[in-house]
Amino acid sequence: MSQLETLVNALPKAELHLHLEGSLEPEMMFELARRNGVELKYGSVDEIRAAYDFSNLQDFLDLYYQGMAVLQTEQDFYDLTSAYLAKAAADNVRHVEVFFDPQAHMERGIVFETVLNGIRRALQDGHIRHGITFSLIMCFLRHLSEEEAFALLEVATPYLDQIDGVGLDSSELGHPPSKFKRVFEEAGILGLKRVAHAGEEGPPEYIWEALQEIGVDRIDHGNAAARDQRLVDHLVETGMTLTMCPLSNQRLCVTPDLITNPLAKLLRAGVRVTVNSDDPSYFGGYVNDNYLAIADALDLTPAEIIMLARNSFIGSFLPDADKERYLDEIDTVVSELAAPGI
Ligand code: HPA
Ligand code: ZN
Image (cartoon, rainbow, N blue to C red; front, side, top):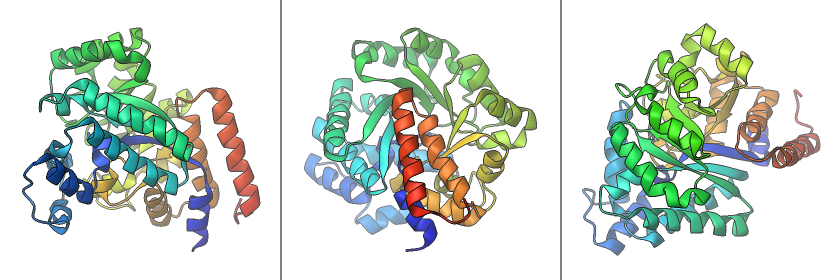
C-alpha cells in the first residue's frame, strides 16, 4: 500500500454529501428489480455500468431517477442504506450526513413513511454494527415547484424528530436557490439545518443566493466559488463549509478532469473544503477513492489531506464535544503514523 493510501485509510472521516439513492449499486438494482417484479431496460450489470457515461448533470439525473424505481418497500430502503454504511465503515468513515429524495419516491406512489422508516432503521442498526453516527437530510427537488416543496415539508412535519435538516438538489440551472427562499425559511423556523447544492453547474450568484437568501449552514459542491474572489474571501471569513465531490465533478463534466478541479485552490485560499462521494455507485468511487484520486491529481500534501479529514468533522452537525473527540482521534492517528511532511 502506498503512503498516501495508508494515510487516507487510517484517517477517521465524516461524509457530508451522499445521496442514498446514488449509492444503489447495479448488483442491488438487479436484485431489487427481481424481488419486486420491476422490469429494467438493461440485461446485465455490465450493461448498466456501460450506460453511466454522462456529459452533464441532467444526463446523470435521468438515469438516477430511472434506477431508483426498483426501490419499493421499507426493506429495500433498509438494504440500500445498510449497504452504503458497510462501504463507509470499510473506508473508516465514522459519521455520515446523508441525503434522501422523498419526492422522487412519492411521485411513484411510495409513501413517505416507507422511505423514512427503512432509512432510519438502517442508520440506527449501522450505528450499533459499525459505530457510525448520523444525520439525515431531506432534499427538495429543485426542478419541482415551491408549492410541491411546501407539500413535502408538511408531510414530513410529524417526523421532524427523525430529520435533522433540509437540502436542495436535482437540476440546478434555471432553478436558483431563491426559488425556495420561503420554504427554507419555514424549515428554519421548524428547527431544521439548511444546506443547498449550489455552484455545481450553476454560477457563483447561486452560491451567494444560498448564503444570503436561504441562510444555509453549508454549501454542497460550491465549485463556482473559485471564479469569484469576493465570494472566496466571504467563505473564508464566515468559515463556511463546502462539501466537494471530485469524482462526481469529473463524471458530470463539471470540470474537464481532476487536475482542473478547484478543490486545491479553494483549500489553499483557506476555505473549509471537504471531500465526499455524492453518488458513489454512479461516479466510480466511495469516499476514500475520492480522497486518493484528488490527492494524486492535485499533489495534495499529507498536511492538506489531514486538513480535509479535520474539516469533515468541523463542518458536520455533530455537537462540539463529539467534534473534539474525532479531532483528537485524528491527532493520535497522525502521530502514530508519523506521516512525512507534517
Ligand atoms: N447534483 C444535483 N442533484 C443530485 C445529485 C448531484 O450531484 N445527485 C443526486 N441528486
Ligand atoms: Zn449531490
